[in-house]
Length: 570
Image 1 (cartoon, helix red, strand yellow):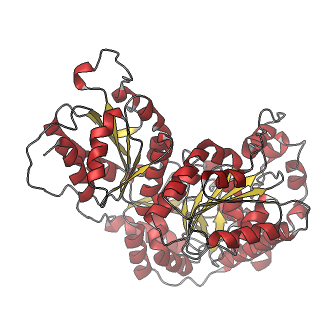
Image 2: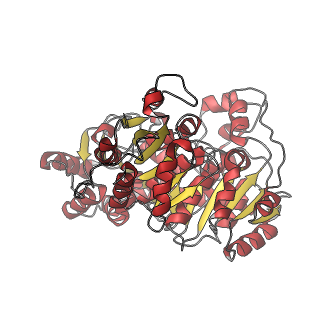
Image 3: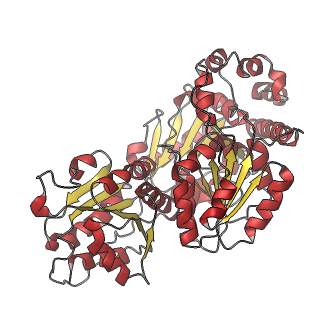
């Protein structure tokens, strides 16, 4: 057999359905093998290698399988870096196969030669150059194991002559890692139970690691009378309007979540390594549950660290813990959240001449299906989606830790390829979308019916806000106007340009019945992404704008602080 066939065998062994990439000289022998296997493994030809890596990263995030992308060496491999760092930052397992010039030319500064070992040194958990055909099978298997076990990026660099080398065919033995379960020791569980039973104001912060334990988390929170705050990647762990859910935390979060954190006498971190210490309690004891021991105590000092599956550990907690009768703190948080929903409703029902970001997300709530997949880009839209899109059972993909603009479209492409029968919606800003807009053609080529909503304010809105926040005059944040609806039609898809709620609703209805990708270009006016709680240093820096006014005048929120509610209830 050829060395390239060993790659295909391993892809099949790991149930890889899609390989994202761009053909070219140093990988053409592998591309030929993918052509022979096209009924089992679909090679998705993108228009830019960055999109290949971002799509593979997104696929890994929402399937929990290893994402795969392919590129030539040299310029193609360099383009992969952004998506590779996104996968590294968010713990998404990815295997990257790059070509390289022929091994007998290496080191001669030949055409397109790049030192890929040095290039990928920081981003990869595993990186080897294949030096012979016989190495191909063991190294590709090892790459998959390393990516899967370490939740990171594994890279194989293959000189182009290696792919076509003949190698000895060996009996196929599984390289897929065996299933196993981690569970904390009995003493740690006992200490955690003791802290939970003593707490008067416990608060749960749940992240991505709790998404597979939604039922167990809801039962646990109800038993111990703890409100649940969610990280960005944990959005959807409980429905947004669930009575225990206080929404997101941080600059994208809610006022009730911020205030609950600062009243908490016990913090329970479940499947999250939330990094923003300033939004967490000052000195409350903490219990952290995570599958990765490296995350325990990484950002917040913990009294008890539990290493294991959230589903398994919460199930055991629910068996041991009894229903807590003291529920005043939970009731106060719930009243605070009801006031927040009224505040949010006032924002989206206010009559105005032009659409704003919150209006778009509020309207979208009525058109997304219960099992839809939402791919969200980075910028003001992240804050608006977190705050105004009320998720139920939908899935949510984003570039969380790297927060790279341009992730929305690649995520939607990966989602639709993997879940062709589900509604897929990408929510993008005009800045982020324009970074990868050439790959709308990829969605057209593969006939992927998805809806891409572009909130178009003709500027880099988040960056403009950041410049204002530090007291600067915005500079070079305006963008040249593009009619993305016409662009979509030119590419062979469907497109709409809207500037009213009525036009937006009509476009959303039409997009649901389309068999091609659709762009809805929504003209919006500028609006700062107001944080859930405004700090004094922000108010000072933003004194020429809205922040100071809001801090000095509590009435602007039209809702009392949590401390006032607690005093009344207690």
